[in-house]
Length: 208
Image 1 (cartoon, rainbow, N blue to C red):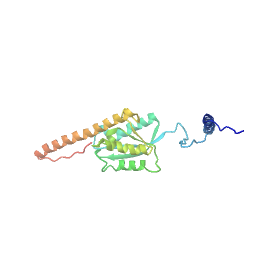
Image 2: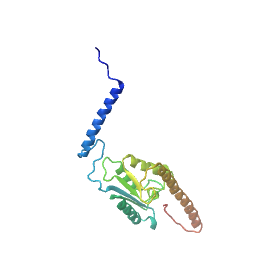
Image 3: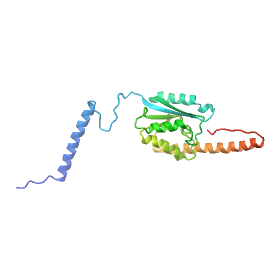
Image 4: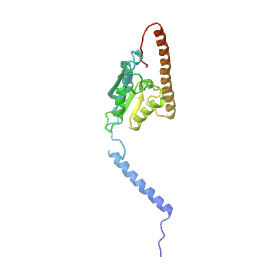
């Protein structure tokens, strides 16, 4: 008498039982302190998250002084469980491009390195990250960081480190506004320079 081959339902049920047993073993191992595949080992759930901070000041603007930025970031870090372990500072640098911003260049380089000393980077707000004329440029640099597993946190912005879809829209608007501020300021400065030149004066100023 020929034995019947297992039905499809029987095969599926058998696979489910085997999967359940494997999952049970994995959970048991995790409870004993084993590291689950692809999970990140942590020494303590209370350990602060290591972060870098990026500061940029284009001129002697009291609101955006490096000291004020540093203090605001330190307060945010204290409240949210971060520890600042690295500082990158661009002083007297315009946010219109990456040109001359050696600190931001170094931050991006370190962020993409195979080994780094921090898992997040903090900046006061979007304008300190940059006033790029193309808002996609600012988004691109943040994207590079996030692709490398590095969180970018805007301490003085309402969205902070949120990555919800609505936050992406708000960030884009903020970047557009930051770039527009520079365009308007550039126009005003050019007009003022022309007027001063007509009066026989020479002046210079840096964009913020």
